[in-house]
Every structure is written in C-alpha cells, then in structure tokens.
Image: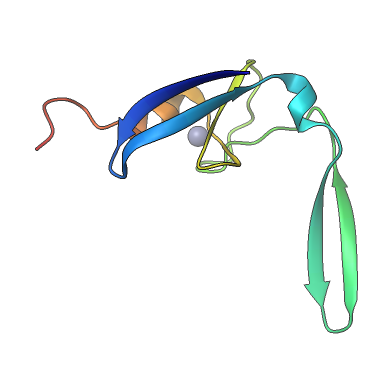
Length: 84
Ligand SMILES: [Zn+2]
C-alpha cells in the first residue's frame, strides 16, 4: 500500500492509498435498544465520507485511518500554499 502525506488544516496528514480489495467485507452496524442490525456494504460501493459521491477510481485516498475521499474532496482538504 502506498502512503503519501499532504498538508491539511490539521497539519501534516497521512494518506493511505487503498486498492479495491481493502474495501471488501465491510458492514454497517446499527445499534438500537437491545439489538444490533448488521447491514453488509456491497464490496463495490465506495462512497466519499465527506460528500457521499461514489468513488470509482483506484487506489482510493484514505485519510485519518478510515475516511475515503473522492478526488475533489482530497483537493479541498489540502491547505493551499497561499492560504494564511
Ligand atoms: Zn467527496
């Protein structure tokens, strides 16, 4: 897995580049009173954690451990050198 670093509002931030295989066997757990509903997430459905756009290009940039970003959001979180 490739790892790069970008600068965001949080400072130097690690970007992990995940291949399609890293998104297999995910699930969503919904806890309600006394029960847990486990909803499998389709292996091929990868949504941007910021804007919910569907991500179709691999590898996918993943920030802060588990947040997949689309290309547009990755650009937007990067602190531009002329921002002060
Ligand atoms: Zn996005």
